[in-house]
Every structure is written in structure tokens, then in C-alpha cells.
Length: 339
Ligand code: PEP
Ligand code: MN
Image (cartoon, rainbow, N blue to C red; front, top):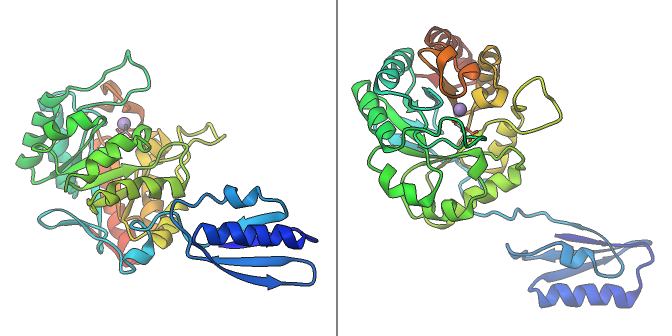
């Protein structure tokens, strides 16, 4: 960390800052210039709050150089992490892994139909919510355990793995036998109680970025899960809220290369929630793969026009099949492949 003192800062002010830094456990190196004094402080503690120094008399700026997360940082595993979901399905390797399925499990027939179609097109995971975090309490809230049963059966029948959202720590035990990956939704990215509980399991976790969360906050949420001992975390960019209203959210594709540099964790993209419109999903899915995404999460429905949730952003099965064919051409151009 670097502390830049104000022009003309008094000697006793500088000394006070040095004393505070030393008391906090830093090694301080002073560099006295013509107009500015700069203090280099080595040994940043993870719980350090820069404001504690910024507010001292004579301080102009505090620049943090190290990141506040450790386990999620690229330094921790420079070679990158590969999360194994099941036999032959690994996220973070050369293959771009696609999870597809409806927003919510609605019936046994629906999930079986969708599972068969997406498996044929090359999806490796079946997605579908059994517990739905809906913005309005009056809309469809999901089938609960019954939905998980339907999804497990449909996935097994078609050689797929299951990813489904967990909204509360109390649901974890119930969900474990049915799912291969637990999804933390955007609305729960900072539910630290839930993150800690997931840290105690060994199940892979799909951690979605909150709609107003910075990349640093997303990585700190991953740190919560990892600090409990569960390193099987996959991040997901699903669009953030901006001033733009043409799309439901703004899919932050730049977050993919940014996260690749900051963290060793795999990162996938969700162009369905990222755009909110069926006709925008394929272009953004293609762009995400080109940008280096390790996978995609895509909503597909057998009858999108009558879907109980997110029909407008759900692809028809034929559209999904076509998208997968396009991705098969794009992936090799960036050194990847699609199953
Ligand atoms: C979902 O994947 O169905 C979902 C609710 O996504 P998000 O948490 O990103 O809104
Ligand atoms: Mn949805």
C-alpha cells in the first residue's frame, strides 16, 4: 500500500501516520520528495480499512496494491482452477461447458422434454429452479422438492448433471441428493450466512454476480465459500443494473477477462438474465465465448410463450441447437471446444 501525503504536510503529521501504520503491523518505507512525501507500507492485513489512514491529517491518498481476497486471487493458483462437476464434465478446462434448461421446473413432462432437447444439442448440465427468488411474492415460486425430483430423473435419463438454485441454508441438506451443483442467485450473492453454509459442503457452487455488485465484491463472496474449505466455486456474470433500459440487465462481458486476470476461478456467462430477451441471447452467448467464458448458462423452454417464468428470455429448443452449432465454430478460434 502507498500513502501519499499532501503537499506541505507537516513533519509531525507524517510521523503520526508512520506511527499508526507501524502500530497496525506494517513495515513502513519513507520517501521524502521535493513537494510530496510518500510512504510505502508493506504487509497489508486483509482486514485493513484504508479509510483509517485516509482520514489522518496531512494524508492526500491511500492506494491499495494488494487485493482484499486471498483464496480467490489468481496468485493463489496461477495455473487456474478446474471444477469437476461429474465424470467427464469439468468447468475451467479447455471445454466450454453449457448448462441449459428452463428458468423453473414446471412439471415432469416439461423438464423431460427440455432435458432431451438440450442434451442432444450438447449441453452438459440441466438448469432449472425448484426454489425461485421471484421479485414479486405473487408470482410462481417453484415446485420445491418435487421439482428437484423431476429434474434429477430428467437429467439422469439424458446423461446430464443438475444445477439448481439454493436460496436458504435450510434447503442445502434437502437439495444435496438431487443436485450436482448449487447455484447462488444474484439476489443472494451477499447472503453471507448462505455462503458460509456452502463453504461447509463439498458440492460445486455456481456463484452469480449480484445485480449491483462490483467484481471485487463478487470475489469476496467467493472468498466466503472458499474460506470454509469448499474451493469448488464457479463464478457467473449475469448482467448488472445500469442506466440502460433496452435490455433487462447489462451483460458485463468485460468482467470475463477482468476476472480471468484477478482470479483463478472459472467464470461462465448467463446471457439469458443478462439481456432478458430471447433475440439477444445468441449474440451475447457468442460474444461471451469469444471473450473467454468457461461456460454458459442458458434458459431454454419447450413452450416459452407459456412459461411460468422468464419466457421472454428463454430460447426455443431449435434456437438453442443452432446456437450450439455456432459456438462449435467460435470456440476453436479462441483455443476452446464445445461438447
Ligand atoms: C436464475 O438463474 O433463474 C436466476 C434467478 O438468476 P439470477 O439470480 O441471475 O437472477
Ligand atoms: Mn430465470
